[in-house]
Length: 259
Image (tube, rainbow, N blue to C red; front, side, top):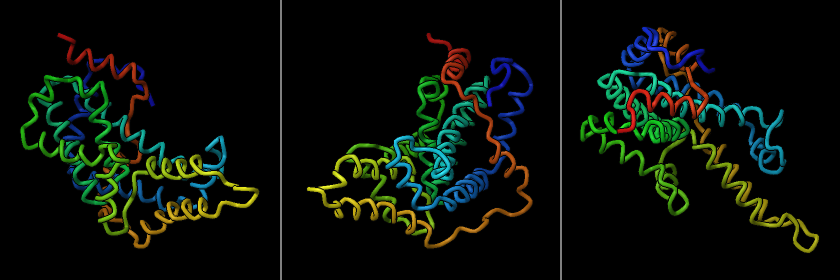
């Protein structure tokens, strides 16, 4: 949802940052995980096949998968929106530190979908250009962030992420776009029929990748948040985002004009 006027210097945006700054980072990460887990747990293994084999890649056969992919994008936009709606430098620095902590907690809680989304949100061009903000981030937070970032490094086919994820015990939530990319790569890189015979080797490779879902869900998280976290739950279930890169860039240049 896009606000009617994201540029209004009003009390509402001040209250926004105060609200999130007052939240406990571990509990916030837990709520993100509860939300993601309920979506991830609803995905049927066949959805990955439908998503890959059907050219449309969406529709009723992939509804749950599409929701989780959409959520990944939403979390990324939420991070950028919260930071860019904060016009006060000091509070903005606190917010960036807060998101770095939340990303670290997501990793610790084995929710790699939100973990990736938050790191990508902090790396969005409209946020990463805020040099005054990043200059004021303490060294230990910068160090932590660069460690987290290294896990999202795409080199060697995302080796850092794959190694770390393999070591994590289930239940765990994978970074879904990468899992889909793997299935698509197998599908597009191998013929389904060889000499009019079904290429079973290709189907086995796809089945192995799809089985990752089953492995991640061999145990259940359960509801990990105490019931009194109703406000937190409601916040996480309805993240406020500005879904326009142009509007985010305008906000970015407004709070820190190009020198």
